Length: 252
Image (cartoon, helix red, strand yellow):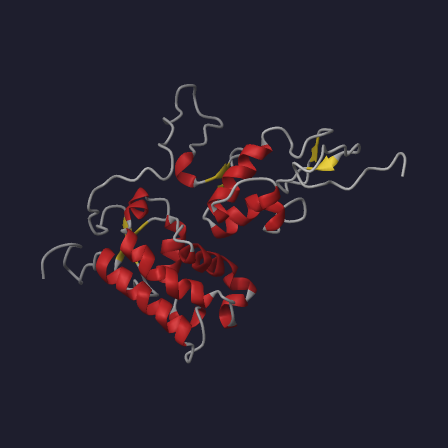
């Protein structure tokens, strides 16, 4: 009808002639300019968030995966891919790629981090005691784990990621039991990330320090297989903690 906006058609089918203001497709709640899908600059954030969540690219991939104005892909990256919201500025993204300079003197900003995904061909060393803390629960109980934002997590060997992928995929296909509880939403996101072999440091720390009961009931074979795989990762890649009176990493 004249004067009313036409329903948006898939890109490439014909030109989009939507006349009224459209909500930004990244899910921020803002209104995009006439003829635009996103608030200026938000397409870049949404594209990066989508790669972090599903390794895909924009905008009908967003639609096909259920993201858009009603469900923010950026929020999904925060919940499932370990992204952070900087309390000092408007930055949303990987914690290792940002240094907040709000209120800092000029020139105090740290140099930009290298691009994600650039892996060096070297044999990684097991996680050591530097900047690490002792895990008090989960598959890594009694072992030293770096902080979630430590770049050491990027060096976890491929075969250990592959070892987790199968059990993780089975556990969330579909998710059942404790994993569906609201309080385990972050854990469910971490298991899904493991099923795609796209874990961040936050995912690793959460998976390795969560108790067996949070993955599934005592009779759940799927939960048991994943937990055993996590125990194997901890045994091969996390250094044992110190005994009483003995420094971490010292010989027995």
